[in-house]
Each structure stands twice: as C-alpha cells, then as structure tokens.
Length: 387
Image: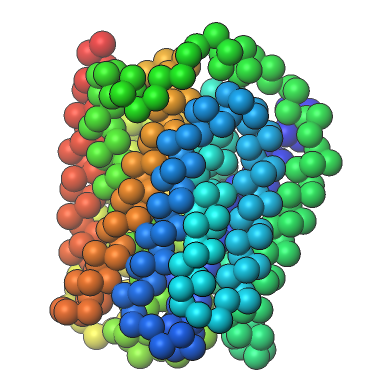
C-alpha cells in the first residue's frame, strides 16, 4: 500500500503541473483572439495565483477539517471545472472570473501533498514528486501545441487538459483506502492547535524562509509564463513553435528533479539548494550572452531549469527538520502562499517592464531574484542550525 499510495501521489502532482504551464503556452494565440496586450497574461496569472494564495493560507484549517485526501479530491475537481469554463469563455473578463477557481484549486492541494510527503517520505521521493509536477508542465504545452497545429485552437487544448484532470480525480476516489497507510498525520493535526500567520511568524527563521521562497518562485513563475513569448518576440518563432519551445525550461527542471532524487538523500537538502543555485546561475548567464545564435537560448532555459530542479523540493522537505513536525503544516501552507505571492506579482511586473524595454531583459530579472533567494535561505538555515 505504501508504494501504491506513492504512485497515486505522483499522479496528483502530474495533475497539479498540467494547468501551470498552459496559460503561458496558449497566450500568444489567446491574446490575438481577445485583442489583449502581451502584459494581460500577467493579470490572469495574478488572479490565478491570488486564489492560490488564499487557499494556501487556509490550508492548515481546511486539512484539519476535511483531511488531506478530501482537500485533494475537491481541489482536482475544482481545477478541472475551471479549465473547462476557460475553454468556453468569449470575453477577456470571463477569463479573469474563472481564474479565481483555477487558483483556488491549486493552493490547498499543494500544501497538503507537500506536507504529507515531507513527513512520511525521503528526500528522493520529494524530488521525484516535483519531477512528476514537471511531467505535467511538459505535457500541457505539447497538448496545446498539438491542438493549435490540428485546428482545435487554444480552446481544444484547455478542454483536453480538463478531461485529463477529471480522469485523475476519479482515480483518486477509487484509491481512497490507500490513505489509511499513514494514520499518524491525523494524530499530529489533532494534537496541535492551528497556528495561523501570526503564530508562524513568531518562530525564528520563518520570515527569511518565506522571503527566500518568494524570490525563488518569482523567478520560476516569470520563466514559466514568459518563456514562449520570449522565443516568439526575440527569436521570431511561430506561435506553434514558441508554444513547444516554452517547455524547454520545464524539461530541464523535470530531468533535473529525476536525477536529484538519486543523490538528494546523500547530499542533504541544504547542499542540493546550493548546487541548484550555481547551475541556475550558469543558465542565466547563457541567456545573457550577446550573441544572435538561438542555441544559447535553448541551452540557457534548459540549464536554468536543471538548476531550479532541486531547490523547491529541498526547501519543502527540510521544513519539518528545521521547524518540527508539529509546526510544519502551518509553515508549509504559508510557504506556498509566499511562493504564489512571488508568482502573482512578479511575472506581471516583468510584463510591464517587457512592454517598455523588451523581453531581452528577462535574464537580468531572473538573476536579481536568485541573488535575493540565496541570501535569505542561507540566513534561514544559519538561524535554525543555531536553535
């Protein structure tokens, strides 16, 4: 049952990754139909992430009330519904409206499953968990590219992903008994009161942790949303080509997380974060090279994805060790919220910058957030090691 449940959890993270790269790959086509400027994708992304922030903040209470499995199933169905109504929207304001349940479906499930794996599984399983999230983010741009190529349009791409989400939700319902393999989590939740934001911030090291996670996800979210537009605007690719090339970042991150799973337990979370930061910086500098050959852009996005690979799962997996199992659910919930604050506000800010000085500024934007992330995470770990 232990292994079967792990497989189900991996499937959940594929479903979580599917919607995350869909908007970025579809936007070059969507914006033409709706007559929207390039930066309008940032508005939709901001609303989606705003819903995710709200559900992340509430995740501790939701999970305590409805259990991890209940929150997970409800979230997948909510996301499937939002994707479908996205596909039938005829006005830009409709996209903004349905972006709310789109985001609400992601926050609680992200917090619930990350905490569940951080408590009950090894670091390699956390890396592979997020590798399967990457599988979802790779699949959806190709689904969108195929829909555009065969005349189904971006609406067909959204409907296809919605159907996949419904199938995954039905699988979760059929495998509900598997969740009984780890009953200890319920006992931990029942024995400790809800901390809330104020209680979490009183714990030493959490403020710098949240800021570091914010910075990392600001960079990741910017790459996720604008990679396809970067290729279309700076390299002159068609919409279909740009949608497919936008997956290079996700390919690098997925391959990196698969590989990281084999060494993460031996090296430890902190070393994995440092190593990932160095590799990501190499990818960013490749994008900065003042050459016209697009091969450096391909390599840059792949290497940047490889560097990003171990950072997110290692931060999450280290949380119970640094702050205690009794505090980790509350902290991880707010970690998710801080992550989506970065994803909410920073990609639209880059869209505003790109409209004025061009998408070629992206590497410098990414580098600034990686420097901030590294400083804050080092401060966090120095603080918690001294406790």
